[in-house]
Image (tube, rainbow, N blue to C red; front, side, top):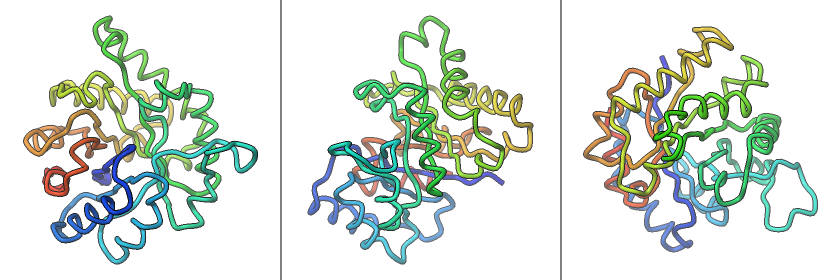
Length: 250
């Protein structure tokens, strides 16, 4: 059975005191019987704080990114070993904002994937189309290309540490949401692509998250689709009640 995951990407939000407050709210309100794995991804400077605060809870901590090189003269960057050394075991890679604002292309992301796996990190790999591709009906081809270029050099064994996050970029922070049917259509397509490369068994085991304006009032319907295994949540993850309501949407 595939793992259900709800991950909150806090992006560049919450200073240390705000992080503590949000974590305290999450701990106080979290349901220990929640079916999904719950993950939060604070900013780099608050990762250690979050790990310490969430010790002994059912909420896990992920990093939002890492650099593809192991070390070196890369001012302002964070290496995989810096993350693992403090206890991080999961990292988000390929988020649409990293692709758009920091020009991370498929080749860079493939290198980051390799570095993360070498350091035994689980990866939440993000991909998805912008509104232009959706309108031009090239979104399936784009998604296929992003997956193949970023991940299809991996072995079947490597995929045990890969979680996919499909994010239609036109539905991130816009208030627009792909319909549950659109989400299911793309998630099923993704499984078909993986099955063609690695076989049906592996394709059926891969967790695929949906990311794009998931809220408490639409989570249950989206997560109820056959090939949707949870969500990568942005804005709604900054409110404990909303985020946990989404996590309970299974």
